[in-house]
Image 1 (cartoon, rainbow, N blue to C red):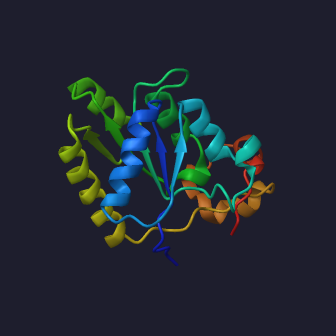
Image 2: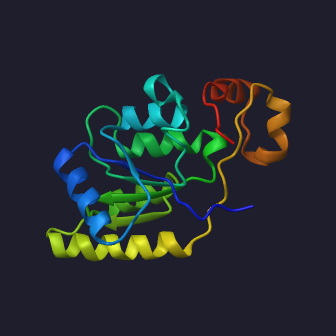
Length: 180
């Protein structure tokens, strides 16, 4: 089973960049709503389903995460590391959108599990081109649905395979309720 309707979570501490990305995605024809988090901590709360993010009809688990690296609180590297320890997020595609083109940042992001690393263009036309490319990819791709999250670690075993770390990890993830 796949899902043809991608759910995109954009994580960026700059409200100007977020507004610009929303505008660019709309102009490029992306009809699915974008969900936003303004920090690494907020992104983790969204992915866990904590607080206001508990309603998975309003805040569905994303299929794609577009994330900046340099943010206050938990930065993008810390979020990548956290995601790597969450078995129920192993199907999440993570794309870094950063102003940094430093090789050490790119290597570290990939080492922590990023699926792609994109350097933010410095102008609107470049951003529009980047968004058009991303949207084309999103429209062509078929995403696997999010993994279910249960209180019962044993019931997760068929879904998690070797990525399951401990029963305690699985219990922790029972805070997130999948709408599926």
